Length: 209
Image (cartoon, rainbow, N blue to C red; front, side, top):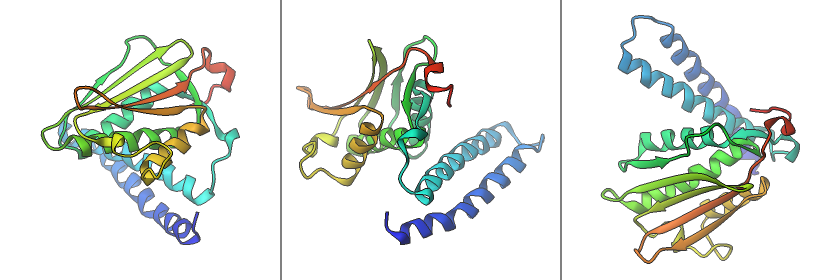
């Protein structure tokens, strides 16, 4: 990573920490209206997420031994909630009703991969389009399928001159043993499928978050 980028990330840590402190202090006020409280809670969630990304940038490449058991269902929900805040399209989320499912990954890296896919899908769908994310388990693999109404990732060929977002997504998925498939459906929609190995027992990964 270029030194200038690491320096900028280092300098961003303090203002992000300040946002967290101020939002948390406001939440402690029992007189805060419910609507404002929900916004503040989301600000805290987003600021924590930005803080984790910045920390990864400052400390450099993420070592494989930092990978832990990650609740993929919760990570997907958080990523969708975050993207929904800044896009005009409704993101339809379909998840199985049973308990948490775990994958071995560095949570910030895996969420960034999913965020890239969602951002691309909402951008491609346009103001009148739709985005649908379906998450399910197929044997020992977690399938995350994102469908949009526009060209999306299908406008780039996987592994051949693809854009930076696609290359980043592929790299981050590979870090946790996953991969990505892109398919142009007969309906004209784009399907992006993320395939990630799942574990059956969280304790096999040391009980990480």
